[in-house]
Length: 219
Image 1 (cartoon, rainbow, N blue to C red):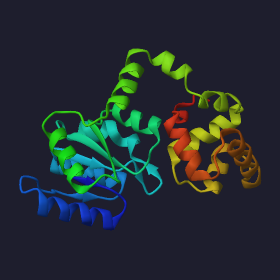
Image 2: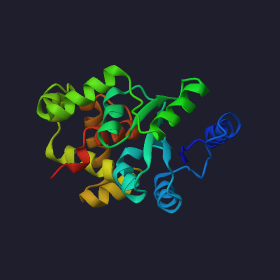
Image 3: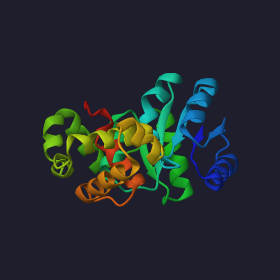
């Protein structure tokens, strides 16, 4: 099953698999998280080729439900990002491999084949990082340089980050209502948050907040 928000890429991957790999078949394609969850539980694919960024929504948020809904499926992340922390998180959540969108077609097919066969498709450096994070999670957290940025946030700002991480594309008006503040005040808070975290817009903030689990802020 292929999951990507780019229609052309989905079409290209489907054609690639149909023409180059006679022992593989595309059972379905999805372009967002909701359809991916519904389709996976219905089709029960062997392998799910999953893009991390689905139209500004991080697909890692649905990874546990995706794996639970189709017991036995193996997730292979196909991503254009080089963000090590985000890719490491994908593996920690259950992905069996990571392959870049820049890789040649034969590499993508080989990765699918290996993951289907029960192997991991990870380079040695990533495997070492993930193993170390699992062995000593507290040390890994202390080494995260972004924690100093997060520590600068006020309680209200962390609450805003939490709402953006869980609400995704909610408009400013809806967020302001949840916080019982005006849209003008919300924009001022967002400006301060962008400055402290070193991000430039709502999408960057969403990615940062989900990566650093600010959606779990208990505020």
